[in-house]
Amino acid sequence: MSSSDVLASPAGVDLSSSPKSPLAKTQHPDKDSKPVTKQNPVPASPLLHGLKLAPHRELEQAQQRGRLKCSSCGGSRMFFCYTCCSLVGVSQQEIPSVKLPIKIDIIKHPSEVDGKSTAIHAKILAPDDVTIYTYPCIPDYEDDTDKVVLVFPGPGSVSVEEMTWRLQNLADMKSAASPDEEPSPKRPRAEEKPGATQQAKGQTSVATHTEERGGEPGIEGQTETPRACPLQRVVFIDSTWNQTTRIITDERLQALLRVELKTRKTCFWRHQKGSPDTYLATIEAVYYFLKDYQELCLKQEYTGQYDNLMFFYCYLHTLINKAKTTAGRR
Image (cartoon, helix red, strand yellow):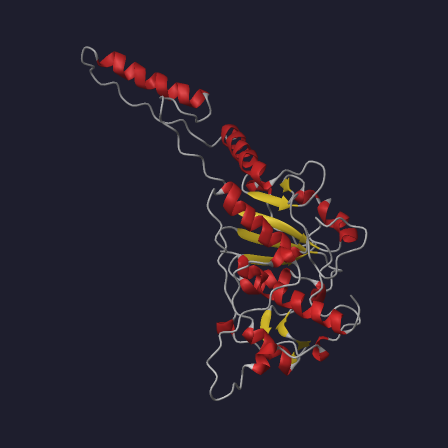
């Protein structure tokens, strides 16, 4: 779920007249000067500090050139076309591509203006793993409620950490209720040697003891391998908060476990007045979910694997804050 996103400049702020990129100063260095490796500017918000992002050089050059026409729809665009989900005036080779561990479905409200959504960031940067649907078009999740979650805050929503065992329980219940599952065939009884019976019984006892304790150690000093998180797909809603009721009450989403990113805060430049700072822009929600999933569900160290999902967001955040400063609107 997201707060109302905005991809173009905020009302009253003209990005085309914003200060030229510092890159212009390094394109023609003095003869005797040494080559300088330019780093991305530090974002104004501390929440964006420390991200491992690809260089913004290509975006800076595109911003200096100004808007161009999309070759497909003819719309005037900068960086990418949010209608065609394609780059505009930017080389594909200079834009990062992010591989995600799970699939992402974004359900966009039909009244949500494409140019005001950061959902397009996810689609362009992770095209193989992100799909955007426009409501009322929603995939059928009925048979996959133990593999799919919906990120949306509110009563009944659980944390990312709690999500794993909730899905495991759903998978167990679904497996137990499945009429198609056949019992494992019994092994034929072999002739037992004297003394072998007690060993076999002992082994059976250990296995039973382990099952009864839900996969915990059955033998002192030995530990069962933790069960993998069954999650395969995550659903996000892309709309203003006032528009969410129509989608979130759709019967096709009612069976999905809801997950809330309770500890994350937004630094979106057009945050809706009156809503808490935990209401995130769509790309923020996608990024923070994946980061928490890596650390809390997969139990793996996060080393910036998904930071480039914030590639466009961070650049626009810095650009828009500079434009606001120049316009005296801060």
